[in-house]
Length: 302
Image 1 (cartoon, rainbow, N blue to C red):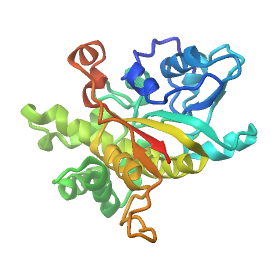
Image 2 (spheres, helix red, strand yellow):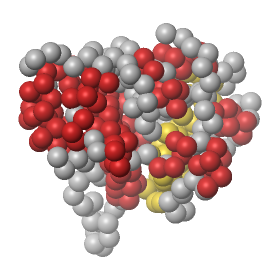
Image 3 (cartoon, rainbow, N blue to C red):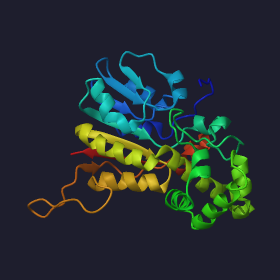
């Protein structure tokens, strides 16, 4: 499905690209191409011998491909970054930028099922090639699995009751649309916190459908392998689950446990952090509401 619908302004555009400390003849990767905003900014700063590779698993993004000899767009999930860069003969890069989560465009296309604003079929796939969709999670997952999804990815305290209610209701008829799901869970959605709870429920299902946490871990581990010494990682995240993984990985190159100590008892860590956490200012949030929860972290490989 190709669409001419506008992609919104990229979040923290200049800050995230500044964070890459671009060398004119360097090789860079934008792993979340979307509308191409970050990629255009990177290309502006590259010289004639620089190279930019971009990834996007969403077929809609292909309509935004940039006509530039220095640019290559790869229609794949960025969990395969190392494999596809090798395919193009690239073993190391000077910087990687990632703007995680769902694009504004995906939220704005009703039939994709990402937004709480529209009624649509339960889909939520970032790539239409994926077999798993929101319908299957809601209608086919065991109660214990649903509970895990709501607890781990939505951080919802009433995850057991949500899971039980869905399982009970779907025995009478399948839950096919986002409105039907809202109806089934109506008693958990009091007016004053309705939008917040719905956002957490949608987030949990979406993360499960797209395996977002697994994808992020695989990507971060590979980024460490393919970054050159002094190469930069510039990552924008939108919720605490993503940000915790990014922060921890940039701090010590691990997701769990402590890094090893060297002969002198010092921790051996692969990155050094660049600057402090960056969040959008009021002006940026006014321009793009999606920016309100954005957090940018930048690290340099030692």
